[in-house]
Length: 465
Image (cartoon, rainbow, N blue to C red; front, side, top):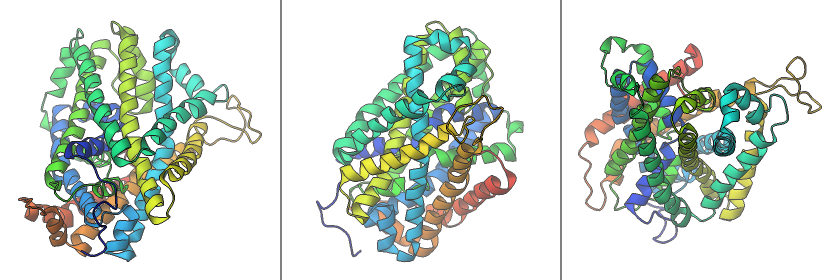
């Protein structure tokens, strides 16, 4: 292929393990830990988990290979990859970069909230336990005051951590950090798992997760598992394309994809076996999302022996999950700015982070009532922006990421061609024995599944993220 950079012209992962951990870190995010357990509970336990695993194998891995292959074939960022392969398709790369930019805007805020809860459980857990909902609304979102800590100080600290990693580059920053962060994340998971399953009454939660009532399997459960698997793997944002562009041609993309998907799924499963037994043991209603993670779980930790200690561990776990995903989101935009616009890495990182931070501040501010003069009110008057945060999540989770992933699969399946993709995978003696079934999946099955997600998000109004 022409236009390939000469050896040494571009950053590469130093090792296969480094790439796998970095890509798995990108995939492992907040959704694995605070959304998957609730969806597994609502979906019938074991039957949902089995359905989810099958969808990851058939749908998620197929789409991930497509995106990784485009990146490695061109050794370019998400926009540059399509500029090399098919200039008319550059919009796909641009869509991915923009999507990641917007997502990190509000992801930064949630990462800041996590840091605020780590601090709270360290120094004043009794305030969280006293009224968990009031603490979240007032101390984090600023329902009764300007949210200096929730919207500015802690999110700024979070994005500073992300910037610190990115400015050190691919090998010295992203790869080195994930080699430390991912083992730490799994260690925290195992500590929490050991505490959860040994709680009195936890066995009821374990039995529920290990039960297989196939009568609970219906269209809603299938669609929920499909959406969760799709969004959990960082697809459709150009992240895997960018990370794939740093992969050496001697690497086995098929094998590496299997490892990434396995690690991501393992984190989700362990999270379910932490949360569900714990809520069964403490009598807290299982749930998902921010309200569950920041409000409902306080009841779990309050009833648990050494609950404040394990609360710190849990939110530290969330911090690592948020940070590894945020790093990949920022890298996608930074790679575009450095390679396509010629900006130095440090300048591109700081400018991008500043823009993302500004978007994120609006996300937190939109959770409460705010008048034109900037005075926080009791909600009885003033200009309200409660829909802005919901709009951002709807735009990215239900529309932009599925559309991006659909475009990658259609491009690989029908424009570039599965033969070209397989030829890229099978270099340096690497074999891809699943080439034929993968070609069928990427051309027909995965696009159809993504169209279902798009249809559900836009027309049926189902919550898939």
